[in-house]
Image (tube, rainbow, N blue to C red; front, side, top):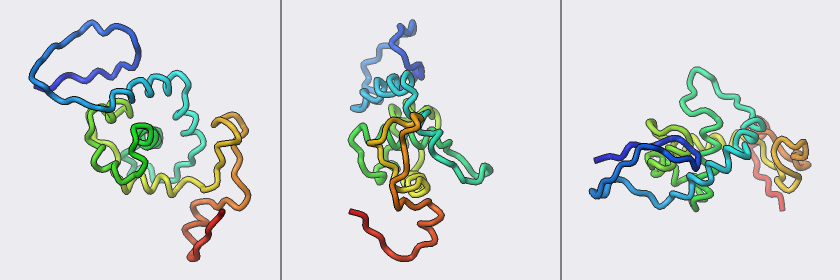
Length: 157
């Protein structure tokens, strides 16, 4: 028997309590719920969304930019550094709930890779928090359009 998934992200009491000893779906990623609560209060991913310019055609968008950012950041926080795990994790009930798509599958690995390739390289997080006016591109950083039109290889050390 599947357990109803609550999408309320707070530490307030939820009056409905269901006990079932049949097992059901369990997760080892329960800490993501706490991370989502902190994210909501501090507006971290919402602030990051404002820094990402989404040039996708609106007619074909299935996954909003905020959900893609949350999925990628929460996967990294859960120990899945590579986007390769996204296809496997797109059906994980806890990850779907904290990203905000409890009923729908999350983005696949190619979708997250396109997001990562669309963001300009060279943003140095040491300059400050998103939205603080302190995040600046590093010298020599290229935009996504410049990277697409470049056929050589460049290594910055």
